[in-house]
Length: 134
Image (tube, rainbow, N blue to C red; front, side, top):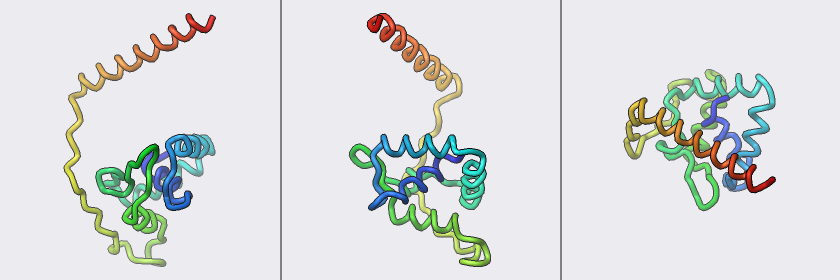
């Protein structure tokens, strides 16, 4: 399943394109477990815009407590869903300007260290909750 395409599809289904995080997570969980059809569909849609980055390209805005699809996001989603040669030619890709450069990822060793630390904190939290819950 392509996360970014799924976010666009979920947000466009809400009035005004805004959804709180709990609703987004619930809808995405439903779609993620709905079977191979959804994963195949999002993969095909994502292939139409290979460099898709919904936040840095301004397709989705973070607002208090949730996310909202922008007009540019709706345009890109319409392009991805359009049949090539029928609705509009492939050359009509809407320009997606990147407003700010994407910061580089931290080195692999640092990311692995952060991942280990997160796992450790989650494990400790589970152990604390078990100890206090007994």
